[in-house]
Length: 538
Image 1: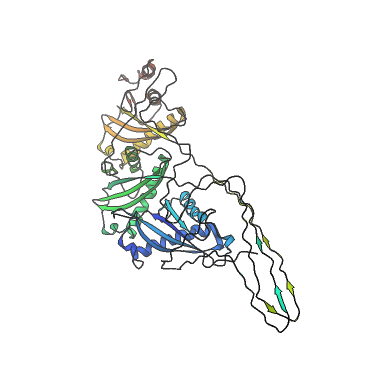
Image 2: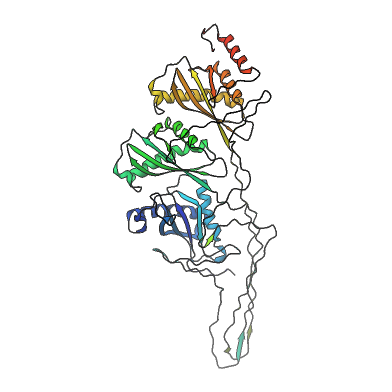
């Protein structure tokens, strides 16, 4: 016998929407409120219909409020209460537990970055009719502009209507109905809510003209420009930092157009410095379309980035590198942060191997006394319902920490031009791409830990190239001398640019081997090329 369905099964999911809260979000009749509500409803409907199919009915917005609470700030975000409604004929034993409804949203946001709404999964709260074992059902607020939610999980009691005749009494006793759930074994890693840190990023686009509609986050102009910037810059951050989570435009300001955005990183691996974030923007500026980034205008958390470099230490044997701030790789359990719950939070749950058996209290149905012509006794056959065992297994995620080495060298056979100061110019982009492609090949072949080589800027005299070489820390990090050696070897094979060996700097310092290894390489190169170029390398 299936458990009777409850009336209007509705869950309330509370999550942070990373958009700026305004007074219009308090007014369900305002255009701003309705536009955001529509985007949220479309997104949630897609997520929950895909997960629960015909059992799911629809979603609706209960209300928006300022997040965080307390003192108001201009960059406060939005907390949204959303009702997730299931078909009211769904038996209670087929309704998902509260934590499953919340986890469905978390999983969807974690696996997709191009939703029309930026949902923060770190503060998700859930109220619903099917609490996890060991929790109680919290009351669901009915302050809703849509469908009120009355959720009751009371035992079912059936009473037969009395029948009256003129003869002897008849006693009808129904046998107890026993519903026994099969053991449910859950093999799972901790349901993880990863702590994040947000870095505020600002830059100016000098080739664009500000218009008043960019002040309105709901306008077509704002949304189109924000999407264009988020999509392109998100690609660069994602390829550079394993800890990157999202890049979201917060607002636009006048002069020409100033973009303020939030770059979010998780804290389970290395968090990039302001300089590293700025370097990504400079690199991206030569490859983006539809907008530009003025390098000198870049601010990270309201301040210009400062350049800091770790100095490698070289030994005469197998080179090792000592840095003053070595990145750390975290392989243990990620830090879990959960906002203080007002009802039932998604607390990580671990179930031991021993299965738990839950037996529902028997439902007893007793008929009222009746009279019939002859005594009659009717006994109903017991009914047993057994649920199939459920096994859930979650997979772990591993992040890799990296270290960045600053590389500089002079190209004496080239002439500096002013357009090389602009990362958006054709001259800058062409020369940077040429250098990155060719030197990246040499580093990749020499070092298993090599991740990327990116030109940061060009300077006058003849042309000085400043670049970043990125290596992961899971294998040996090359020393300054090893990096310089690769550049010396590459200098005799590159085309379109040259490398003056004596000008090579690693993290701002000259790297020379104590055994004269570097000088031998330089001299060897001179002997090979001396007849072609009398200026040599010294």
